[in-house]
Length: 144
Image 1: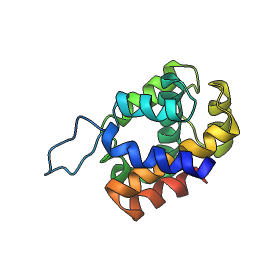
Image 2: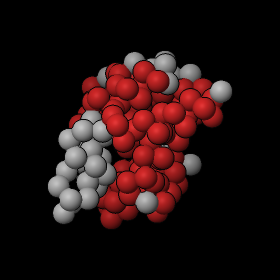
Image 3: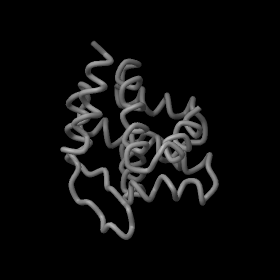
Image 4: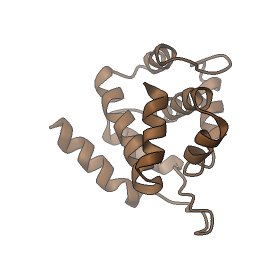
């Protein structure tokens, strides 16, 4: 059941994307409708989705070097907005530096372990689909 839900969410991602960047930049933006649809399919609110993504990006930004993080940011061009939204929600003060702090942020927005277990692979799956395995591995490595 969980696998079916995750596969469905991943299969629907391209349909939920809008606001594609120009082909020359190769950027594919995660926009509010994607997170809204993804969040709904995972039983989360849109606010939880924005907070979760912003928190994940904050951790990645702090754990990766600038060049590595820019590879992720290329596919999430408004990454700073997501980080700021998570900060504005009170999920962290300055930034997230450890996986334990990320878990605390997820907990603050009421995400269950099951939701976290689905959301994280959905985001890394998106990055793999549009940025390749290397970009997804960067995010996965930053979250470990």
